Amino acid sequence: EPLHHTNKNCNFTPTGGIHAVSLEVKEGNSTCIKADLSASFSIAYNTSSGSRTAAFSLPDSTAVDASSSSCGADGGSPWLVAVFGSGHAFGLSFSTNGSLYSVANLTLQYNLSDTTVFPNANSSDVVTVVSTSVGISAAINTTYRCASATSVGVDGATVTFTDMRMEAYMPGNDLSPTESVCVADQTSTTPPPTTATSTSSAPTAAPTPPGTPERGSYSVNNSNGTVCLLAQMGLQLNVSYFSQSQNKTVQELVNLTPSLTNSSGSCEASSATLVLTQEQTTNLNFTFTLNSTTNKYHLSAISLFASWSDMAGPFSARNTTLNYMRSTVGRSYMCNAEQTLAVEPAFSLNTFRLQVQPFGVTTDQFATAEECQLDQDQMLIPIIVGAALAGLVLIVLIAYLIGRKRSHAGYQTI
Image (cartoon, rainbow, N blue to C red; front, side, top):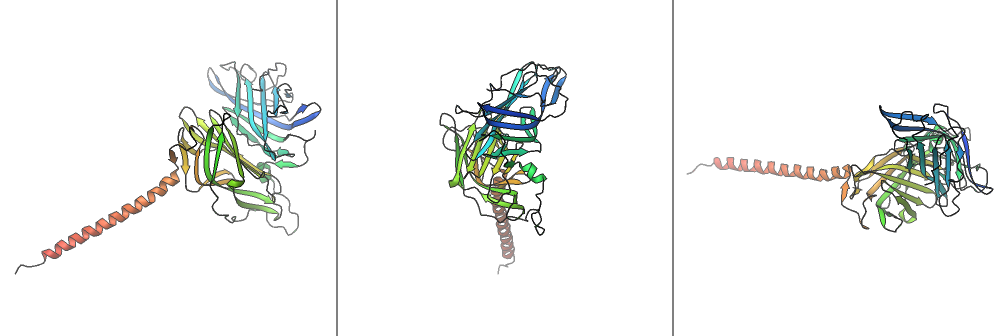
């Protein structure tokens, strides 16, 4: 765990304004991670009179912890660890697939014995929490830029980044002039027209459907090689982006092709991640979260990074507050019907013939499935129709018997 340092000489005022800080991780004379950002924190904690929330910002005295930060030269993940205040720290670890890099997890450490931040706290513990659903991705050799607020929730705490410019796996010591702009910034700014006769930037009415996507089989293995997550599904991306060729915002449906898609991910006690990468241009992440109290799990986060040929810049979207695909540990979730998962205004995901099991996998086969409401409703339709037809036949039969009885009663005996 990289966050273990205490800095008693770097105090700050919790109610101060938001400061921009510059952070840099070096190995020798070479820079591998650089970040200019502002951050604010909201952390719930307990006092003798009930629950309270501490709100504070990253101070301008924040410094990189050189002993915990790393460029990943030994085969590990690159780490940016920043320390501030009395024993507080946050860390960002990075991963790459060769064409994209992303924040693999965010680790936050806060010291409840710091009375300037956590007055009257019941505990004096140093608490460490980790989020694996950060949703920050960029093309390799580009700078990730996001002026808009990016919030990450993690176990009662929320970290919000603003005015972020950051790059990992840097080839030089300066941030790349080529930028991967977050989707929030792309949708808040309308690109200027390049000619006087350019068309409107409004999205087109509807994209042309590319047909039903092929169903793919994906899995994730533990470190010991055993399967810990199973998924079979057809996936269709519904993305709105600014087109270079058409000089306007367009909406496009793109099917994920299983033969061109690689799967990876990780399985933890209370979370599991499936990462699908297609041809180094599309990176789709699913995060499932387990409630150990109820033994129920759900799809809690989806993120997409795409760098397609007609895009004015790389596209990224994420949502870490989802509540889809709810099921029970030891069972799989199944939905054969087409369903649309809304992620952000500019991105939704259509699924077809889906079955997934992110927890409690004991063999290479799915456990008994819990079906989605759409499938249950579709099963009810033939039952209702069959019951209606049976009722109609019964009514006709009863009418026939009554009519026959009356006709017999009308004959006279000679």
